Image (cartoon, rainbow, N blue to C red; front, side, top):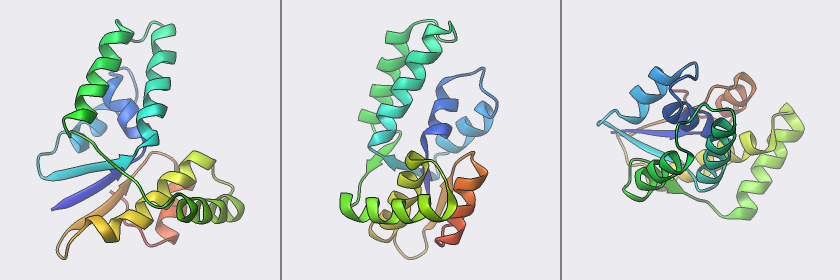
Length: 147
Protein backbone atom coordinates (compact mmCIF):
# COMPACT_ATOMS: atom_id res chain seq x y z
CA UNK A 1 0.00 0.00 0.00
CA UNK A 2 1.12 3.54 -0.66
CA UNK A 3 1.35 5.67 2.50
CA UNK A 4 1.52 9.39 1.78
CA UNK A 5 2.52 11.89 4.43
CA UNK A 6 0.97 15.15 3.19
CA UNK A 7 1.82 18.51 4.66
CA UNK A 8 -0.76 21.24 5.20
CA UNK A 9 -0.18 22.85 1.79
CA UNK A 10 -1.65 19.78 0.10
CA UNK A 11 -4.65 19.60 2.38
CA UNK A 12 -5.37 23.33 2.02
CA UNK A 13 -5.45 22.86 -1.75
CA UNK A 14 -7.87 19.98 -1.34
CA UNK A 15 -10.41 22.30 0.30
CA UNK A 16 -9.86 25.42 -1.83
CA UNK A 17 -10.90 24.84 -5.44
CA UNK A 18 -9.35 28.13 -6.61
CA UNK A 19 -5.85 27.11 -5.45
CA UNK A 20 -3.31 26.03 -8.03
CA UNK A 21 -2.64 22.34 -7.58
CA UNK A 22 -6.15 21.59 -6.27
CA UNK A 23 -6.77 18.83 -8.81
CA UNK A 24 -3.45 17.15 -7.96
CA UNK A 25 -4.14 17.42 -4.22
CA UNK A 26 -7.58 15.87 -4.64
CA UNK A 27 -6.11 13.05 -6.73
CA UNK A 28 -3.65 12.20 -3.95
CA UNK A 29 -6.09 12.47 -1.05
CA UNK A 30 -8.98 10.71 -2.80
CA UNK A 31 -6.86 7.80 -4.08
CA UNK A 32 -8.42 4.69 -2.48
CA UNK A 33 -5.08 2.85 -2.71
CA UNK A 34 -3.23 5.48 -0.66
CA UNK A 35 -3.33 5.93 3.11
CA UNK A 36 -3.05 9.65 3.88
CA UNK A 37 -1.27 10.69 7.07
CA UNK A 38 -0.19 14.03 8.50
CA UNK A 39 0.83 15.63 11.78
CA UNK A 40 -1.85 16.67 14.26
CA UNK A 41 -0.79 20.30 13.81
CA UNK A 42 -2.03 20.14 10.21
CA UNK A 43 -5.63 20.43 11.35
CA UNK A 44 -4.72 23.70 13.06
CA UNK A 45 -2.78 25.00 10.06
CA UNK A 46 -5.54 24.14 7.59
CA UNK A 47 -8.22 25.64 9.84
CA UNK A 48 -6.30 28.92 9.89
CA UNK A 49 -5.89 28.87 6.12
CA UNK A 50 -9.62 28.26 5.66
CA UNK A 51 -10.52 31.13 7.99
CA UNK A 52 -8.18 33.44 6.07
CA UNK A 53 -9.67 32.24 2.77
CA UNK A 54 -13.16 32.97 4.08
CA UNK A 55 -12.19 36.51 5.04
CA UNK A 56 -11.07 36.94 1.42
CA UNK A 57 -14.43 35.53 0.28
CA UNK A 58 -12.79 32.43 -1.21
CA UNK A 59 -14.97 30.15 0.92
CA UNK A 60 -18.75 30.44 0.79
CA UNK A 61 -19.31 29.24 4.36
CA UNK A 62 -16.46 29.11 6.84
CA UNK A 63 -18.50 26.95 9.19
CA UNK A 64 -19.28 24.55 6.35
CA UNK A 65 -15.61 24.36 5.37
CA UNK A 66 -14.48 23.75 8.96
CA UNK A 67 -17.22 21.16 9.49
CA UNK A 68 -16.12 19.31 6.34
CA UNK A 69 -12.49 19.40 7.53
CA UNK A 70 -13.48 18.02 10.93
CA UNK A 71 -15.61 15.23 9.44
CA UNK A 72 -12.83 14.26 7.02
CA UNK A 73 -10.26 14.09 9.82
CA UNK A 74 -12.61 12.40 12.30
CA UNK A 75 -13.74 9.77 9.78
CA UNK A 76 -10.24 8.89 8.63
CA UNK A 77 -9.87 10.51 5.20
CA UNK A 78 -6.66 11.83 6.76
CA UNK A 79 -5.04 10.10 9.72
CA UNK A 80 -3.15 12.23 12.21
CA UNK A 81 0.17 10.81 13.37
CA UNK A 82 2.70 11.92 15.95
CA UNK A 83 6.17 11.16 17.18
CA UNK A 84 7.86 12.05 20.43
CA UNK A 85 7.92 15.82 20.62
CA UNK A 86 11.56 16.07 21.69
CA UNK A 87 12.60 13.89 18.74
CA UNK A 88 10.54 15.96 16.29
CA UNK A 89 12.03 19.17 17.67
CA UNK A 90 15.58 17.80 17.49
CA UNK A 91 15.26 16.75 13.84
CA UNK A 92 13.34 19.91 12.88
CA UNK A 93 15.88 22.20 14.56
CA UNK A 94 18.70 20.56 12.65
CA UNK A 95 16.84 21.01 9.34
CA UNK A 96 16.02 24.65 10.05
CA UNK A 97 19.65 25.39 10.89
CA UNK A 98 21.06 23.50 7.89
CA UNK A 99 18.47 24.34 5.24
CA UNK A 100 16.83 27.53 6.46
CA UNK A 101 13.38 26.06 5.90
CA UNK A 102 10.33 27.29 7.80
CA UNK A 103 9.77 25.77 11.23
CA UNK A 104 6.44 24.12 10.43
CA UNK A 105 7.84 22.70 7.20
CA UNK A 106 10.68 21.19 9.23
CA UNK A 107 8.22 19.75 11.75
CA UNK A 108 6.31 18.03 8.94
CA UNK A 109 9.48 16.48 7.50
CA UNK A 110 10.70 15.44 10.94
CA UNK A 111 7.35 13.87 11.78
CA UNK A 112 7.33 11.89 8.54
CA UNK A 113 10.90 10.67 9.03
CA UNK A 114 10.14 9.55 12.56
CA UNK A 115 6.71 7.94 12.04
CA UNK A 116 7.18 6.07 8.76
CA UNK A 117 9.16 3.21 10.36
CA UNK A 118 6.37 2.73 12.92
CA UNK A 119 3.38 2.96 10.56
CA UNK A 120 4.59 1.17 7.46
CA UNK A 121 5.14 -2.49 6.78
CA UNK A 122 7.39 -4.33 4.35
CA UNK A 123 6.08 -3.72 0.86
CA UNK A 124 4.48 -0.36 1.68
CA UNK A 125 5.52 2.64 -0.37
CA UNK A 126 5.96 5.63 1.97
CA UNK A 127 6.11 9.02 0.24
CA UNK A 128 6.28 12.62 1.39
CA UNK A 129 4.09 15.14 -0.43
CA UNK A 130 4.44 18.93 -0.22
CA UNK A 131 4.66 21.93 -2.56
CA UNK A 132 7.79 23.61 -1.24
CA UNK A 133 11.12 22.99 -2.99
CA UNK A 134 13.33 23.63 0.05
CA UNK A 135 11.15 21.38 2.18
CA UNK A 136 11.29 18.69 -0.52
CA UNK A 137 15.08 18.92 -0.66
CA UNK A 138 15.34 18.53 3.11
CA UNK A 139 12.98 15.54 3.00
CA UNK A 140 15.04 13.84 0.30
CA UNK A 141 18.26 14.48 2.24
CA UNK A 142 16.72 12.68 5.21
CA UNK A 143 15.87 9.67 3.06
CA UNK A 144 12.23 10.32 2.20
CA UNK A 145 10.82 9.59 -1.23
CA UNK A 146 8.74 12.37 -2.75
CA UNK A 147 5.28 11.53 -4.01
